Length: 406
Image (cartoon, rainbow, N blue to C red):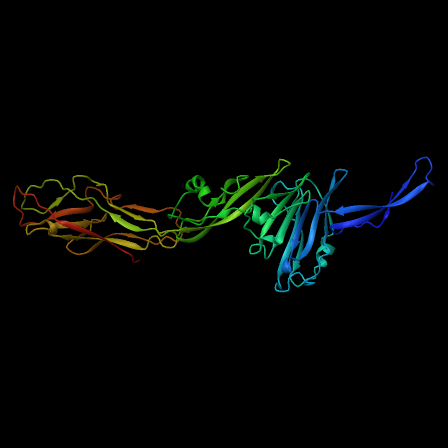
């Protein structure tokens, strides 16, 4: 029978007073001192100012039930009674997540400022009943700079999670298992920023999702895919969200979401036209004649505007004829509207206008000849008494200009 004198709140040597008696004669007894060594066992040891211990989170099991107990765990001298007075804001946060399956549920959390007393840490956390598969999160303000601030003990064997596993986040997660704490890595992946073209599709992001997260160091973490795609309908700095998962020892998965910075590059406003535009042969006549194109709607007259939401549209196209030789048909080229009105291309003539688009879900592609017919579009108009001669080939150059203006 243990009669007292044994405290397990601190590691080190203790003496347990034990009463030993005969079963047949309880009055026949003797009291002896038994030396006991208190070890860290399965614990998370968290430190603060000058590496002094703030608390040890000891995981123990009794009859199939698991408990995390927060004690200081050591009798080391105080450098400072405060956690770390240089930090007026939050210095340490200890959170407990229960019944984890999928996204982390709302935790039971304990937050401590650097100016709080060290004694408040074990007092507030106390004892927490936990189950296998539950997760403990430790968020530490200095861990990124001082990796020895957290020690993990498994069967009293010390390891340094941040040094040994190359953790990089200020938060680290530990699963409750029947053999102690198990380090998890789902929040430790390195985010890779990326550049994509405007109007990049969801299919592209699905195929290249691993370009934005480096999973090489942590093979236990699987990338599920984009949970939120970046908006690629306009250029600039955007964000996407990628979901990852890690399998716990109980078979359940814990999911985590990363925000990935993605730069959408500028689009362009371009016009393309065919090299030639051919017209039917014309018989010379003393009357005015209308020369028609060989093809009613010639291919290749196209404007592509991929500048995105808020930038697409707001431009017009002009055409102007330029003679390439002394004898040219440049003076006889016209642009004819649907209403029958026409303008000579010797002057700069507006042949298409595109209004601005406030919202653009895809690039704007305009076929400038889509409404042309045999009697509309760019035609030849030969007046009486023209200077053309029979059995001759004539040509001219048409210059198309795209103007960014309403």
